[in-house]
Length: 403
Image (cartoon, rainbow, N blue to C red):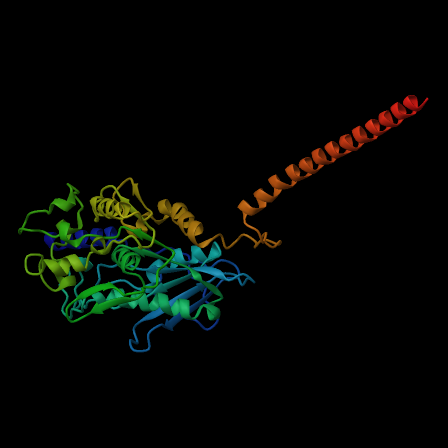
């Protein structure tokens, strides 16, 4: 009995570490006729905002749904952010990030939370990453689902009153891994689910900015190389995800690192870093499930090829949306920087038709032209006066000579 109680306590603790939403007294404000699932995290929509729930973004996959949190209507099309939940690839829902989506709507952004294909844990009640998947899917499937969802939002921009050229992604935990893949391979890719490979398409569409909360970027460095031995990538992190769920990545890839190192490499965003990648901003706690070496390695790779990036290390051991309050202001600042401030009014005057360089050149040329004209005029006047004086002198000399 004591062992069972202790085990349940540990499972409860690990679920908390994975960032599952906590329940409070507030409830979400539904749009007319919309029923939000009971798994939704407590949220209050801002005044004037609307929620469109359960929109199918892929007709070939009935379970691929999204919720649209649309800000107060405006004449200016809003920028958009697509939010990707976590859950260890076997759990989670589009409602997990509903609080953050509502906060984006309050700031004037259109926010879209999405579902994507998950592994089937077979009724396992343990921590998601510690549940052996009974019905595995290719690891490329969640990435393709996220790509499809973002492209659906862009293709239906007029219906959502958003600007299709101002779209970003926020991913948390496993969703942060997906976000990292979208930042590197783009929104269109060459994927082979049978061979479990993925790479950018010849002309991939790109996002404007991607933010990751506790994302994983290199599976090869945090996968155990020997039973009972922590990998070097955990860097002494007592809460390292591999220590708590040593077989989690085996279920994701369908094999072990020793059996198929290429699959672990292909499934790592760091493998696909290139100079045309989307700017990526990464948050992580100092002692959490994901070791800080993960975002640091990704940042080093991005910096090497000249892609803008930054890593924010927060104190403590909170994971993903657990530190939402601490990371929110800076997260919002990143999206505002790249997508614009939707709450600012557009300029009322038309921009100048000439470039600043031409304008400056014009301003500096006109005064010198006037000065030059004035100087030439003065010299001409003096010349005329000298001619008149000399003419009069010659005339007077002629008169005196005559007399």
